[in-house]
Image (cartoon, rainbow, N blue to C red; front, side):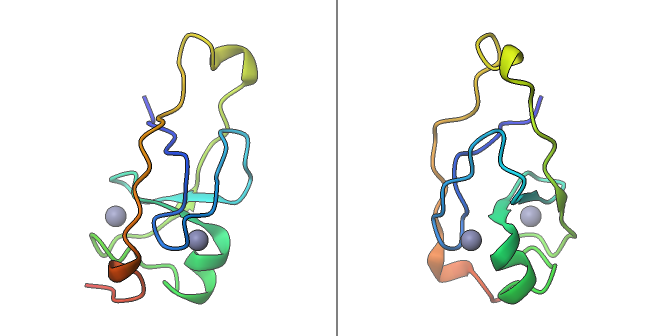
Length: 82
Ligand SMILES: [Zn+2]
Ligand SMILES: [Zn+2]
């Protein structure tokens, strides 16, 4: 199950489970669409992998399968793709 992390690692923007702006890599590094397009150029700075739009979890599934509340924020790592 996806963690559905609550924010962008790069700019700390909130990315709620129903956000259409959330992008994830295969390791679930999570960023907003703006950072992926402008700062990261589509390459994950943590693993070098590609991003895909994060699927939205239906609201009626969120009660039993809540999104992660643990914020991952690494501004120092953003934009320096491996
Ligand atoms: Zn961002
Ligand atoms: Zn990654």
